[in-house]
Amino acid sequence: HSAEDSAPSVRLPLRPELADEKPYGAPQLDVPVLLNVNENPYPPGEEVVATIAEEVARAARGMNRYPDRDATGLRRDLADYLEVETGVSLEHLDVWAANGSNEVMLHVLQAFGGPGRTALSFAPTYSMYPEYARDTHTAWSVGRRESDFTLDPAYAAETIREVAPSVILLASPNNPTGTALPTATVEAVCDAALTVDVDGAHPVVVVDEAYAEFRRPGTPSAVALLERYPNLAVTRTMSKAFAAAGARLGYLVASGDFVDALRIVRLPYHLSAITQAAAGAALRHRESLMAQVATLRAERDDCVAWLRAQRLPSGLPFEVAETDANFVLFGTFSDRHAVWQGLLDRGVLIRETGPDGWLRVSIGTPAEMAAFRAALTEVLGQQG
Ligand code: PMP
Image (cartoon, rainbow, N blue to C red):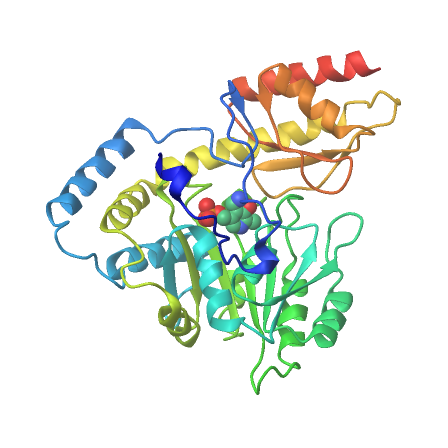
């Protein structure tokens, strides 16, 4: 008899609310042109790879020991980088780091969410937010964005007073729309949060700036508001601008009290010595990496202009969302799945996401964007 024959039939005690859930993630397909998960298309250059290899080797030599639990050196380097990137002094603030900004935000929900509490965001937005809530037994509430994907500050404030959430999540630039929030909107949200009482405290506001380095000139970062709002935090990541999605390093900047709360819920040694070493090494190459970000911003603006000049099979122009990120949301197609599939058949993988009829393309290299334009022209020509 095989083990299978003799194993008693058992049901696993999966939490009932997880019974119909699927693991999150876009398809990982082996396709020549990957423009589906907002990655940086440029692999790190050889000099970056060499520094990473050196630093990782150093970390490996001490790997019999647990890593620095507080990632002190890396958090200081991240703060230095952020001061230069934003021009804001972080002297009275603290930085937190974890395995991707996904984990950072899970820490936020673990510390400030929980049973009897609610997390609030405004859709369409990043589809992991409700999962952080689900996984921390936090209720999930979602308001709406306007038809151009902006957030109306008065409506947002009113929703916050009505819902009385303990955590408010705002992506800026937003995924999948690319929309950045004006300073006045973040201020309105933070001010509204200060009028709400949750268990004798005020809600926390998280501005998720995963794509901040791609913002256009004049678009603000919420980092400038941190000094004024001790209940505000800004998250960032090395997955996009730093071309390090594979390293898994995200971070958050906020008041010391805010960060102290996250330190309660993190697992001991959550950030491996290898990760700390690799991230620190990549940060030392910020200048060459940021030069690539400038190239991607220009490519993004070209992509927006090209899409705006195209016509749908109906003869109508495309709708193209304003974007401060390294991706563009465009449409609207009566059968967006057919367009997505047509592109995939031509070796170009983009993302079927956002409101009905819209598609999202991440910005790639000039050659990848040329392949995208050619494939889309062909697909729409066939449909017309
Ligand atoms: N926030 C937003 C808005 C994102 O789009 C992503 C990545 N898709 C993340 C956070 C998480 O990124 P990471 O965990 O790689 O830092």
